[in-house]
Length: 398
Image (cartoon, rainbow, N blue to C red; front, side):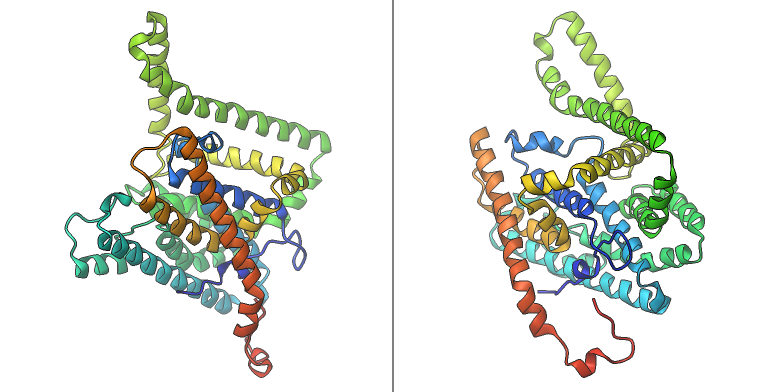
């Protein structure tokens, strides 16, 4: 299996060389939990009440992209003294690793689904199996299968990242922002051109994190408090409306025939408004309303988690932080868990079974992450190079 080192390189700090920002790890862990629940896709289960079934106006996937860009900007800025040549080499090596992983897992899941004669395990499998064509399309990143399909997109973004990072280094963030907006404006149906704007936004924020933090702290306490309340309330209201459209509007539509005239009229108008909102909140092409709501919701989420992070850490028994600290491994592990569970799922389930199956999947994810973390010291020890090699010019500590 391909050894991926992105997580051990991407660590967060409040200041260069200091401790990680726990809130970021907790948020990443939360996103990964939501992604797994929505990919298991057993509704209703009780767990889906925390995720919106992946049908809210903003999903955890956008957060995962944003956090990836933020980490790139934040961490590699701490390494800028090693030069842009080092930055380019490091990011491109990560891009190659992600690309190889994407090809490996796509072919692994495709071969498994075909060999077990279970094509319905996930949509997207070719009706006619032509292995040379499948391999070619996979290598060209035009075919992806399984639940690790973001890896090839991250590979593309990591390949382009050093160019954006160079503009940030030259203090031309506005040029990077303009290029990203232009690419988004001409995105068409391209997923990568659509979602790169979230990744780029994260990279800009991450690169200027310390400056942004300092400026925020320089604002008067009363003004900061008002801005926080405004952000949280705006996020709460828009989230509630989106949540209601998933869990209430859908019920009204199902019971349309049994509603009184005023109920049908109300539901019809709600459907019209919801359709208009979704017109500008498309997920695949990253609609403008979705981008604005993402920034609003993420800002509120960060402020809440930052304030209560000690309590969240205690009540989650540290598992959210554990998942967030090892996000790349967890993302790949979740894809394998979802694939295996989908192969074994019965044809029909009830709410109780949905709850237990989804809970079992989460338990498996936490368990394999704990095992992975405990094995890391021995893996790193065996992987250590001799001291003479580790002190050669150009070698750096991960």
